[in-house]
Amino acid sequence: MSNTKITYEGPGSDNPLSFRWYDANKVVAGKTMQEHLRFACAYWHSFCGNGGDPFGEPTHLFSWNNTVDAVDRAKAKMDFAFDFMSNLSLPFFCFHDVDVVDFTNDVADNERRLQAITEHARQHMQSSGIQLLWGTANLFSHRRYMNGAATNPDFQVLAHAGAQVKAALDATISLGGQNYVFWGGREGYMSLLNTNMKREQEHMARFLHMAKDYARSHGFKGQFFIEPKPCEPSKHQYDYDCATVIGFLNQFGLQDDFSINIEVNHATLAGHTFQHELQVAADAGMLGSIDANRGDYQNGWDTDQFPNNVNELTEAMLVILEAGGFKGGGINFDAKIRRNSTDMEDLYHAHIGGMDTFARALLVADAVLQQSDYKAFRQQRYASFDSGNGKAFEEGKLGLEDLRNIAISDGEPKTLSGRQEYLENLINRFI
Ligand code: XLS
Ligand code: NI
Ligand code: NI
Image 1: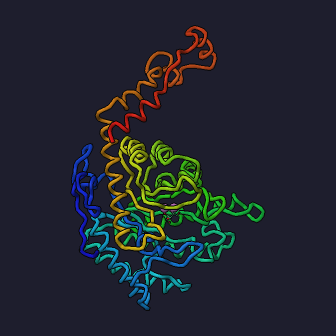
Image 2: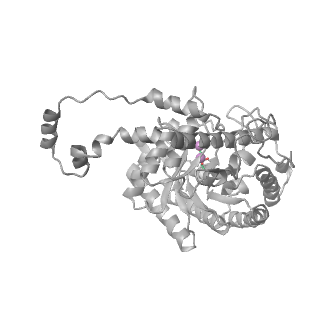
Image 3: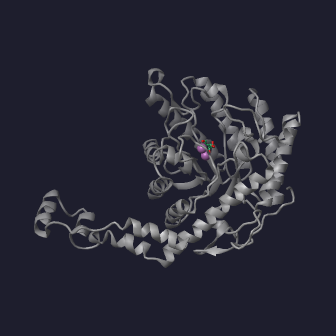
């Protein structure tokens, strides 16, 4: 597969290794598809995920794992990764520190390893033009983080988390990374019986300030993103959903530097739709980036499947387009192929499907916005606040007694339809 360049062949193509909708340079609503969508490959799922599950051994066997030296092994993996991303014309990638090179318990040696692989990445980025959408540190896999990283009750663990974030920030900054992500997998708790929640959250805020101050003083201009998730692996995660994160950022004075990376399957675990979470973030000016995937309707964990539902993604793209796009981020495929998808070709099908589904959803959402009365309908629904007493209310010119008097003088309101089925049909009409 190593020479397979995937190209746009259009909806009529029957070649499964081609794009049918993603046409990178096609202009939609004033920007190219590539500029709108800013696709990124998730290093951990694509090149580290081995198909293993709690019941079984790895099924995805990679040749580079036979290389003994850690940095050589990391380079062999990276050579493959850049080949793969180039074949798919993926403009960005994202990584955790431990995805790109294996770590030990030796902090200084881990820094050296990360620097060595960062140099290798730099060369690949220069020759391929692929850029770093965001970097991050894995503060959840190592056993020292079982009680949390920045929220650990043991300061010595927090110090290790700080060392890891410093090194990951150094790598991100030196590669020109556009953003930096914090996903707090273990930042939460399992039982209140052993937990001081207030103190742990204050520690997390202090830690985030330290990371932000360090990065800013070393020239980092990008956004920091918090990635909400309600549970798994912790029972209660502090970054539950967008609304919770926005409250936390505002409470601790982090709102100017941080925005949100929203993951589809995390939204659904929190009992929300993806588009709800997008809208909450957009309304707060914090729609930073997204982790694209999908869950499974029949179970309740983070299955991280590749997106494939045009209808659902169209609703998401409507929110993203109306918000004016992402605040520095893009669409990172935080998704993995199934345990029994064992061929490298499967990884191509997965990304082609995800990219095509988003491209198609972009086209449909744009058509809904440009060619239908969707916008006009939504505006008209609130027209009673555009003039008269409704306007006076919005402007703060009325009191509760005024409402009472208006209720009497204007009488019982008319029954006004929300037209949900009509609007749902609109999306299908443009697919
Ligand atoms: C796990 C998260 C993780 C973050 C990066 O559920 O989605 O992959 O995106 O740490
Ligand atoms: Ni994610
Ligand atoms: Ni996830």
